[in-house]
Length: 184
Length: 313
Picture 1 (cartoon, rainbow over the protein chains, first blue to last red):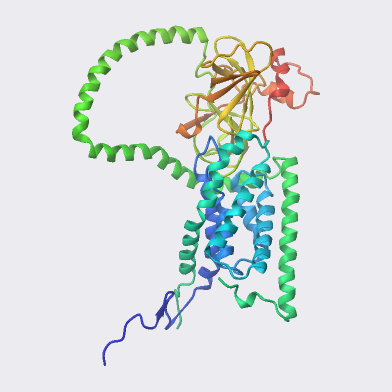
Picture 2 (picture 1 turned 180 degrees about the horizontal axis):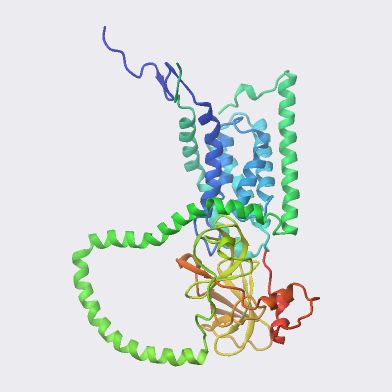
């Protein structure tokens, strides 16, 4: 009998025989990736202007848009609190803005159940710009014209980053669902 | 992508209730965030211990990136030098000839420098630093300009201490953790620093604009004596900074002062020094004016300039 294709019983998540998904990995990857993204801007020195997009918030939105229902609706509270510890914003702004974003994305999804890439980009871009404005206004200092002007590149970067982050989250999702655990 | 069918509640009471609870919790979370936000805008230091704890956890990772940042130039320089070794030889020979000429000129400039420095009465190395550390990161995504420092309470760092590099003032310690601290950079829009012109006693306040430049506001209004290129140094008013440390250079004059560029850019520095508060007695007196000054001599000028010395948030 000739040999079968070794990958005949596999799907993108690995072999389907004798293997199952690891619940730990499936549950932790979204949260860990969002928290790491919150930490990322803190490791760079920006002395002149806010430059790095709010990575934690963008990552949360992308996960929410790509995997509806994976993150609970109230997840903005813990993730926002974590973001506030490192972002330099007054404590509470992240909690509020992340929670409001989760509710608004839920409402948008109820209104437009069938979505595509371009509409997701529009949603994430609008969300990113609104978050950018709100974060600048709530930062604790006066919102001057100069500050708005120098922060423009940050807004542009946050909008343009969506396709890259979407690909990243897609591959993270693949990693999350790999059948890594051996049964028996 | 279609929403998964499990997300539709349908007629299931349980699914409807869990959906409703989700909305309720998220709404309560948003309200909680709003309350906490109001609290931290009203009392900026309310969550400082929490932030200090969090800063301590990530400070080691910041040390690694800070080391990488200082090594980065060498790495790229080394690689590009390897590729351009041959053509560089001729260019370097030519440069050496030019450098010999410049060396002669530099001797003259050195003498002039010594004379000018004596004229400026710039005192250096006066205070013994509390600690020396790297800037390990900053709030790069926020509108606030805060930096993280790799030393904290255990090294003797306390809020209010000035942070200087070898070029000039960087900022002031805002909050401390055990092994990390937060520094309010001069460019932050909440930062106010009393300054004077280096060559005479034109006093002013340098406020951060939030875009990397400082707005210098003169205390005595009238004819604006500032010129483009003037060096502003700390005046020592307010008691936090020792006088005579370089702060900024005027790049543009306005009706009430000027716009100035920083002398010491935090992103270009490697190590910074945390210095003790210049006049702790004066700072304590300004914090609580009701306590009488018994044995401390605070010059009248310093107390007069006090209200403008922003605490920063």
